[in-house]
Amino acid sequence: MPAGTISQAIDPRGKVRDTASNKLANLRATIDKARDQISSVCARLLKQTRTVRMLQYANATFHNDRMVLPLKAEHRGRIPGIIHRSSDSGATLFVEPAEAVELNNSIVRLRQSEQKEVNRILQALSRLVHDNTQSIASTLEALAVLDLITAKHRYGKQYECQCPDVRDDGVMYLQQARHPLLLDLFQSDDEADRRDVVPIDVRLGDDFDLLIVTGPNTGGKTVTLKTIGLMAVMAQSGIPIPVAAGSEIPIFRKVFIDVGDEQSLEQSLSTFSGHMSHILDICRRAGRHSLVLIDELGAGTDPDEGTAIGRAVIGELIKAGAKTIVTTHLSALKGVAYTEARADNASVEFDVETLRPTFHLRLGEPGNSNAIVVAQRLGMPGRMVKQARAYLSDRHRELQKAIEGTLESRRHAEQARREALSARLDAERSRDEYEQQRRDLSAEQDEYRRWIEWINHLKPKDRVFVSSFDTDATVVRMYLHKQTALVSAGAMEMEVKLRDLSEPAEEEEEPSARW
Image (cartoon, rainbow, N blue to C red; front, side):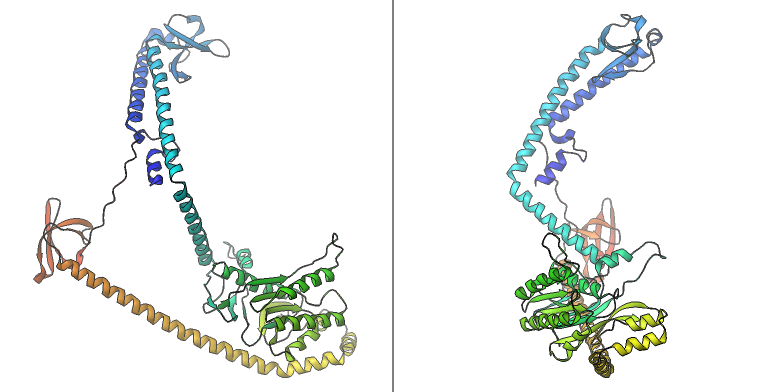
């Protein structure tokens, strides 16, 4: 293979190895011998007291790969040889001793021959690469795939991710889903800075196709949308997702999301116009195999008109069969879940005591903005609170009363659904564990049968591996009645139990890299 051949000819620093060819090995050995001879010449001169007195310092140095001596300028001509250069001050002359000139010349010639041989080897290796271009490109592509798979595995292991079950009926059920970026953001080596990400449970496409999420600002509605969208596209990209075991997800042909401020000075679009243009495009393109995520539906305009447009958009998406999640502040849109069979409500929790969101998602429960409650806890006088409640429309109060009347039953229903799902998952987990144990036992039985057959066919001079001594050995005699065997390892013979014997590992021959 080219990779093995190249690695045997080129070292990790990119230098051609001495062993790349016999000629290169001989050339470099001759160069080393000549350098040793030059070193001997200089060493002999440096041992002479008369010579040392004429030098600036008692050491040889190099000039253009030629060994020279640092001669004091006033002793010019006292050491026979060639002056290659002088120091900047002119006080030192760098002299190549006459005895070393021819040796240095031979090294120069050998270096030229060495470079020619190196070029020949590199050309041969280049031809080898060229002849194997297709296989190398295929290997590189496979390596990229392996690198991607490794990255996915490491990511999944780091954040305790799961591979969800894939469904073909459009049903999504995510348990303990966590936003990947929040996991990375809140992960810290410092225990004091570490924070837990609040997970969400959400389903879609089972008893409803459209979910209307309501609740206060900064309560987590937008994060919920983004979490669900990321779970869908990550799963379809083959990336493990941060959810609990038992989560299920369908394959979506298209994923649409409308989140953020769509103002555009260039296109003369207001926030409402920008959102509306995007939403209308989604309505035209969404279908049964689409996931649609819309943030703040109906916002940016008059609440009554926003509600009317929101209901129309919801009706169109339900008609198209798209799996849809929308967030909104418009209370009137909560009522859609009571008139549309395939729609339901959800809310992000808000703690009125601490005035902080809990970020938990509650299915079947529409949320409130809690604006009046928050204002009261912030110090709004009682008379103003009373007036504010009086200004609420009759329709709003009737809707709240209807919602509160069904709230308890919906909570019980959702709790029963969660318990049933937990029981199903426990049963499936037990079944999977049993199946795995059965497969493991079957594999062990097959392995034991193969070992018995191998033992029965052992004969003298066969090679074996002895686990109790961690060494290869040769069979001398078999004692099946005693369940032992006499084996020899080097100059030693020993009787070992048959259970300590196994097949020896095969030795691989290294290909030659001589050029």
